[in-house]
Amino acid sequence: MLSKLFEALGHTRSSLASAINIIKGRSVSAESMESLEAQLLAADIGIDTVDEILDVIKQYSKNDIESRIREYMISIMPECNYPKKVQKPTVIMMVGVNGTGKTTTTAKLASYYKQLDQNVMIVAADTYRAAGVEQLRVWSERVGTRLICNESTMEPSAVLFDGLHAARSSDTDVIIVDTAGRLHTYNNLMLELEKMERVVRNHFPDFFVSNLITMDASLGQNSLLQAKQFGTFISLDGAILTKLDGTAKGGIIFPLYKELKIPVLFIGVGEDIIDLEPFDPNEYLDGLLGSHDKSQA
Ligand SMILES: Nc1nc2c(ncn2[C@@H]2O[C@H](COP(=O)(O)OP(=O)(O)OP(=O)(O)O)[C@@H](O)[C@H]2O)c(=O)[nH]1
Ligand SMILES: [Mg+2]
Image 1 (cartoon, rainbow, N blue to C red):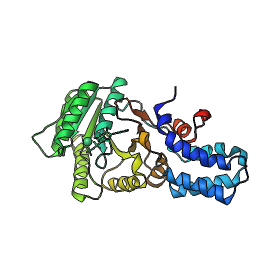
Image 2 (image 1 turned 120 degrees about the vertical axis):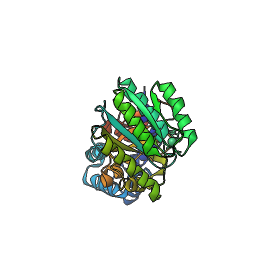
Image 3 (image 1 turned 135 degrees about the vertical axis):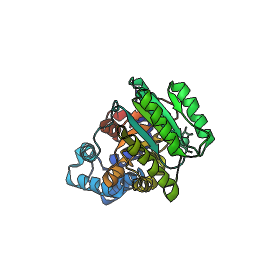
């Protein structure tokens, strides 16, 4: 059975496959290289990486182009380093621009860790949208996790503090904190995130911290700017690439890692609770280049 990730990368894969096929087995012409370059750029692989891939192609025989591209791509990807189980207790703070999938991913991650038999708590620290708390309440009931919220305050750090306090006294393994969406250009909102991180580090120094940014795959290069800006206010430990199911822009993980050293840890491939896949470079490349089932490319 094809994985959801393989399906989600279908759009990207088919555009790359048609460009690679033009080159495969023939002498490489300037025109075919241009076509491949355009497809790689359209997939958001990033200009530096695209140039390097084209150099790889120029160096090698036309017959093993696919395996050379694959070899090169794997060499520049983050390792498969998503934590299966988190160290206890870990605070995962979900941050990102509005609508990129923080709340949905909070629920998906809660379900993921619960299935690994970890004791999970969700903290609803988006104090700007009442609907956000409601959305999380529904998810946490479905997942069967505790939800900490406080609708009488507009102060996300206060909700976070309460949540972590409750987590400490209830032997919780992983606390997933949903934060409000914010534009990376809004300084005050970014400072609020900085404060939240400070609350954890100053008051709960025994907690491990993992700040994850959700990035909507369809936003392409713009999400690189977002991640860069968020990273100037809080330390980012990883990214979750969401909505990969609806886009042909599956290549953003390359510039993200190359330029910002932020590894993608999970990938969102749909709106349901199970639509989250841990990032695995080999599976990802199978999805991108179609190498595990060429008939589907
Ligand atoms: N197709 C698809 N849709 C997704 C994915 N992740 C989230 N969504 C959808 O994207 C929309 C926004 O998701 P939310 O989780 O509410 O995003 P958010 O970042 O919490 O939004 P704000 O709190 O408003 O900033 C919802 O309709 C989700 O169902 C994904 O991986 N694939
Ligand atoms: Mg939200």
